[in-house]
Amino acid sequence: MDAIYPDFFARFYDLIYSKILTGQDSEYYMRKAREVDGPVLEVGTGTGRFFTDALKTGIDIHGIDISSSMIDMLKARISPEDHYRVRLQSILDFKSDIKFVLIIAPFRVFMHLNTISDQVTALNHVYEQLETGGQFIFDLFIPNPVMLANGLNEFMDFEGEYEEGEKIKRIVSAQYDLVNQINYLTMRFEWTEKGKLQTGTWNTTMRLFFRYELEHLLNRSKFKQTAIYGDFIESPLTRESKEFIAVCTK
Image (cartoon, rainbow, N blue to C red; front, side, top):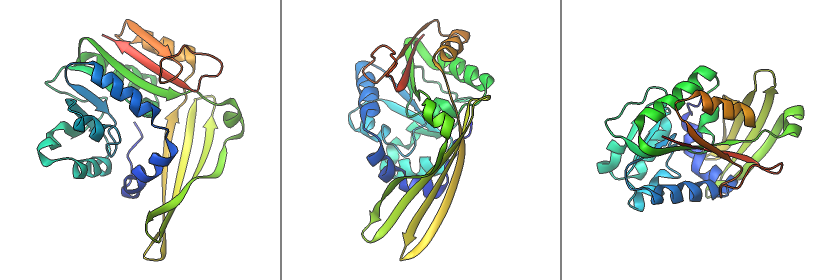
């Protein structure tokens, strides 16, 4: 699983994604969390984009992440008495005495599992951590054929100020290995610090999924009741769909 973020990435994470993301995913997961009565686990909490709002509304939420920089940022945003809710751990080996009624993996977390072995292990591990009748929900993006063919070269997806007079921009490149269905992603950060230019680069990989492959993968897991939707209002999949929303029930 390849999603350990450096400190500079965590530092600017909230600023960048508050602009890039629409908020539809957070609204969807919040609605799902409010519908259940019991503990909720978020896999890949990051700096707490969803977690902190859920906690403020009284949801009994817990979270794990594999990046210590993200966990540190999250803990700084919540009360020390709630720090027990957050753990530095992977979906592949997480253990808890709590049985959850809902486990979520928002914002493409599952796409950082590159091998079939890890994907099935993760699904089955989540299954064991759920109450009977509990659900595991995660989202993936549907691959864009044009981007698969052309790749992405030095695309600036964010530019702004993180403090008065201090600027930050992010430049993204992506190359696709279609045989192995891997997206090789590079993000270069450039920011000023007291007028001096600073840079940092983060490389990661993301697994590309297609519809029937995802259906077969879910069928290989312990989950026997699954559904795949095309957006965050759970519409059926169509040619225009941009998202896979997988809902797996124990």
